Image 1: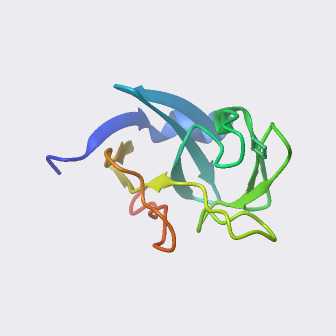
Image 2 (image 1 turned 60 degrees about the vertical axis):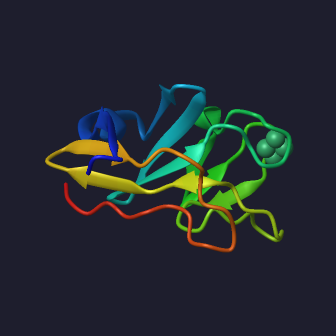
Length: 117
Ligand code: FES
């Protein structure tokens, strides 16, 4: 896992459901939903508002800017062709790891699954 970076403890995400982490110049918004962890670039694909201030609602992330709803598992915006870039995620021994670098671009799947709690 040399290209993976530990960014949080799962317990931090379990309490609040989200957490902002900064890796160099990249701001990454982490979300915990239904036993899985997701990581997105913290700048909405629409107008750049911080998704870390968004709201989780039934498997969707609602942007605080203009309320676009993104599917946590695909990054796709509801009723649009836009995708929010995301990062691969692993959970190992209670630690949340992401693989930084260029976020996945559509149409590739964006976020990875929690592999362990
Ligand atoms: S900035 Fe996110 S919906 Fe407009």
